[in-house]
Image (cartoon, rainbow, N blue to C red; front, side, top):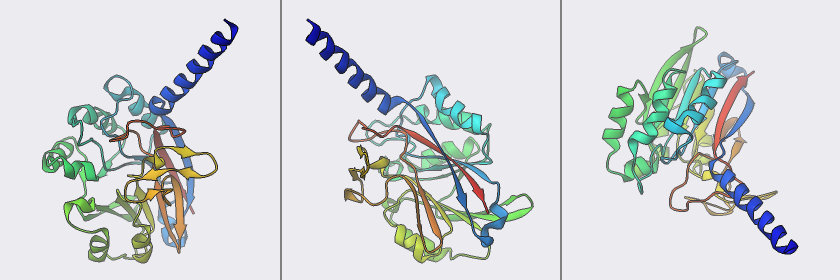
Length: 267
């Protein structure tokens, strides 16, 4: 009986831990340093949300909304796969967006799942109606503390246009630039284009994270992918990859809790 009780207790702990790994929202805070060319970005705070895939965090997404609201970011970036093409429920994901719009300006780019639904235009329209700035291979300029900053939004290449082609259409100017693009596996394209700060998702943290090793598998990268979570830097380009919030075809995360990232920029 004692052995059975121990087995049941261990099993309960494992099941609880597994459940928490897939539903317990984690908040990652980071400070990124920008060079002199990005001096006007100093102090800017950004909430990075990616790959919700129609997951839920509290009734009407209240837990997710509260996590962002507590940090009071200056900007909110959504880098694709807001919905899941396999269990499409736009209203469920829009509940989070409705909460976000009262916090800070939102900028959004598509992921591969928005394209795969064939509802891409309807999704963009709903987001625009809520006040979200949808960037479809477009560049916009905003003002922060009296200085101009560029925000470039790159559609997922499933739409038919490659990331490198979009980057060539919008070469870097002298202004600081923040780039939203769903795909991290084309990091070398961002480096070649001299992009300054790139915000990405898509890899789901590698789905199963092996302590000391990293993610196991990611779409577009295969097994033991190079870009799954955190910050990657090369030749002045920094790419921030979110582990994301939801799941798609493979429904479970292991050692890889859903994540919202908060970035503060400093010189």
